[in-house]
Image (cartoon, rainbow, N blue to C red; front, side, top):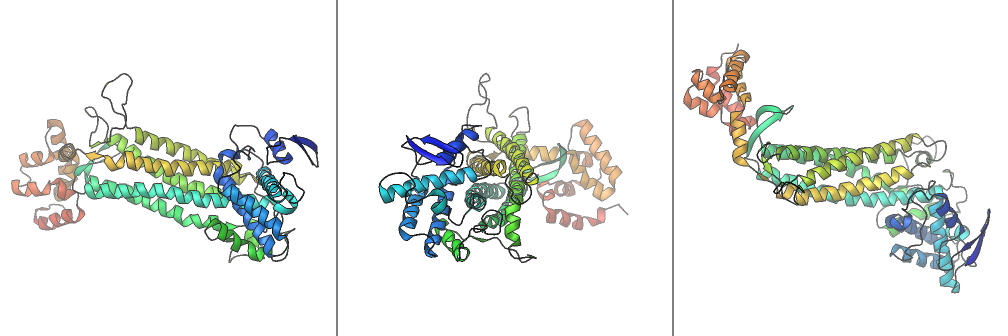
Amino acid sequence: MRKEKDALGGMDIPDDAYYGIQTMRAVANFAVTDRSFNDLRCVIRAAAEVKKACAMTNRDIKALAPEKAEAIIKACDEIIAGGLVGQFPVNAWRSHGTSVNMNVNEVIANRANEILTGKKGYDQVHPNTHVNMCQSSNDIYPVTECIVLYREVGTALEGVKRLEKALAAKALEFKDVVRLGRTCLQDAVPVTMGQAFAGFHALICRNRKRLEAFRPHFQESVLGATAVGTGMGQLPGYREKIHENLSAVVGFPMHLAASEDDVLPDAAVFDSMQNGDGLMILGGYLKALACAGGKIAQDLYLLSSGPRGGINEINLPAVAPGSSIMPGKINPFLPELMIQVMQKVSANEWTATLNCAESELDLGFNSCAGFLAAMESLELIGKGFALFAERCVEGLTANKDVCREYAERSTSLSTMVSALYGYEVGGRIARIAYTEGITCKEAALREKLIPPDVAEELFDVGKLADRAATVDMFRKYSGMRRVE
């Protein structure tokens, strides 16, 4: 064991630990779950990248001795590469980012000292003086979150695009499959399966673009703001250099938060320090995407119901037996998964809303729950949408004959009679068709309203699902119309 001291006293630290006394205190203070930052490697990687950029900048402005800077940078590189595993035991539920920032500072400092002197300790590199130079947890950790979220949004979008592509392919595959439209779960006018899937595709595409448009928000940084936005403790030249170095380290552009509407210098920085509405807005976009996926899943769930007692218009790929008691039963597992994803992501959005509303004064400190919720939502959407596309949408098929039969037997086809002869006549045809179990075409022919050759065209469900073809038919048979 080795002894470390802080403002509150001393503590024994295991010899093999690269973390120190502040980490040990945090472990005890926030032990509410078994989930630590050891489980959040993406966060630790981003934190190490920020620390590396800060060390580079402090070296460049001659605030940090080159040999110390290089030792810090080497330690950061080891963490970025996945090293120093198990050295980040601070619980994921913690007070803002102070504890995890100090955990990272201590690990880097001990490793940097080991590089310089062959042993742990803070003889050459101190976690606060050197590793945390020109920094505060209040600017370091929000930027760490932004880096993580920028990357995780990009990963989630790949899953969304896979579903989008699958829906587009099915729209084209099913463009000539006529099915019965349904409103309020009741029979309506014909539509093609392709049109329905084209609508699904447009829904996902629209919401994917919203998320893509918001992603650059996470390229905004408050590095150099230190504790409350004023930059107190920041050395000359740091602000001018830090984002150039950070961008080079993370591999995408990062810049200081700014707005053309600033009424005073750095107003956007103070805004970013004070407020966490970015997580709430992200949660809203993710909720919209999840609900879009859930709506599609619910529709496929209904359309695949059966096979003998339901709608049975589509067949979902069989991915597993559906019952422990009923042989041969196949359940819609992937649509059910998507509905559960929708529910969880929707709940996570409310968490971010509470975070945003309950931070106060000069620091929007209350981001923990919202950040963890956002990461969970991004993972659920990215992996869930990809699975839904791969194991459900890409392999589903249409029961074309069933679809057409439903469409042709719908009493909603009396709409064609209504358009020619008025609503009352159309209603009479619908009642005859329903009570006698015949089609509207058969009822109209029996009532001698429409000649047989004309009826074949007017009740062609393929044409009725085509807006232009329907208009052309009314133009062609305008002389039959008896509505004034």
